[in-house]
Image 1 (tube, rainbow, N blue to C red):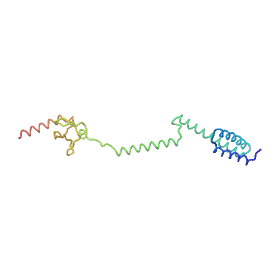
Image 2 (cartoon, rainbow, N blue to C red):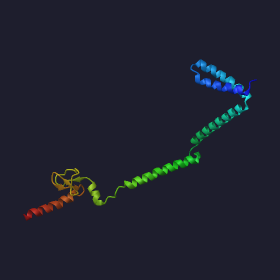
Image 3 (cartoon, rainbow, N blue to C red):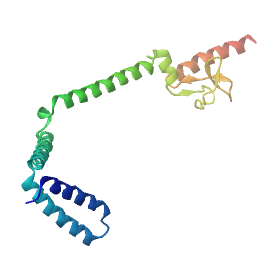
Image 4 (cartoon, helix red, strand yellow):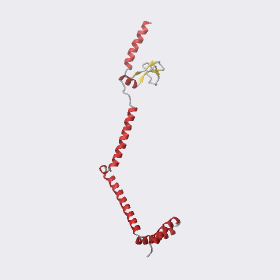
Length: 173
């Protein structure tokens, strides 16, 4: 029977041999030697046995945790761990807060009926050309006729009043 010191030295020297392996044949011989040395160390050293058993238990616990996580994911919303659920709710709250801030910064002003009339399609009452975004003194303006633009819905009424004014001016001359 080997001594404890010699068995440990053989084990660690065999582990060091793994670093120097370059071919498959060398690897197989070192593996065989490691199995034999490990078996002898297992028989002699109780500390080694306890260490290996502890590693096996830790590996088993880790496998069970991974399986449990998989079952939790499959089971659904109710079985999600509390800390994960809280993390998700916090992230959701942050996103909602960010959206609220963005809305406050970029809030669209409420348009009055007069402004809405300007927002609908504007036409020149004389040549009926559409709005080309020309503005004179803040008033939409037709460059061809040199006349202010009117919304499509107010066009007929505007033409009546405009013609009446024009006729009155002509009579005065």
